[in-house]
Length: 484
Image (cartoon, rainbow, N blue to C red):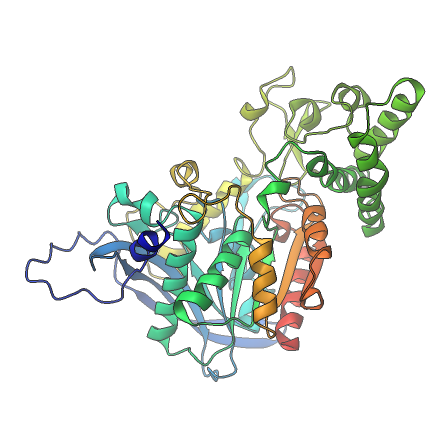
């Protein structure tokens, strides 16, 4: 089974010269667009070349399998031997790269109105004073089925691309193709991934080394999912690792947040809290004292804490909806008016970020690609594609263990590549990928722990929507590059 799957995933560069070669599918996307730009930040002018284009992947028969869209920024006049290049992708699975592109690292950034951070209708693009282009060339990639990247045959996409292993191998091939096309074999190479992009960056790094013989200098993960066992399971440890985020968000809403709040909540969650919830249920005054302390720390109503016996799920409407406000799972300090304050099934409550202002990145990128980069197409930019997400194969090697695990592969990467450095960034107020889960994982690494930098910032899953956190993230990444 494994050998057969590996053969299927061996995406080729050239088409074999078959006499009866099938006709090429119609081109849905325009030719590559190359444009010249200048950006001035902190008194320094960056002259750079932008390429909005596509790369083709082929299947095991040499037939077209997918057209992969990317945007690359290269600083003019830089020495490729010393100029790093960073490959970016988001997560989902099913998300295009517009979030990191226009949110954090690209030369243009989407800003939301001061005091109205949930107003995506009035978000505006402007020069990004914190662009990573100041210290690295950039290549933003839309995985197949997202953004402008399209499979040649939709019915074949789940088999070839929509799974942990297929995705990693195909993206590693895309990176290898871009490196070869642009003569960047000698450049320092980095990955940057957000959310599921955490697992994706680890798996792509593994595929790059194994399939393409490309070793990396570093990886940056933003709000990463690393081990699904701490996110998708009904387990006391999973609940414990969410407590520090709830406590941090409650302090932020009260205007009292400091990093010390998060640290104290982390030690409480893995100490007294975890010891309490794994023991037989408390009764009487001991139970009331426990529920009162937990409610006071997290800001969750005490009656809701008592109802769940201290196992607080942020997804529960009783937890997310407070005083007529609905809080975002992606940034629990941020809320909108609850459309169903009287109660709603947990899965039916819309998220203020994911289904609200975060959608602004899709339209903003489509306009930017057409008007700023000269890449004009009638295709829809798929910011978040539910079909990809729903059909995603979380098993590895076809029928391997599920949920998938990224930390084991990261341990191997750190052990085998002594030059690899990793920076992991989290927002304190993110309950989807809580910072405590990553801290717990990394604290148990037996090797390479000194080359993994953990950084937490005020903000949520998309911590870069806060200008101060975006600037701090860029500075921390640049320091990591300089030290490597």
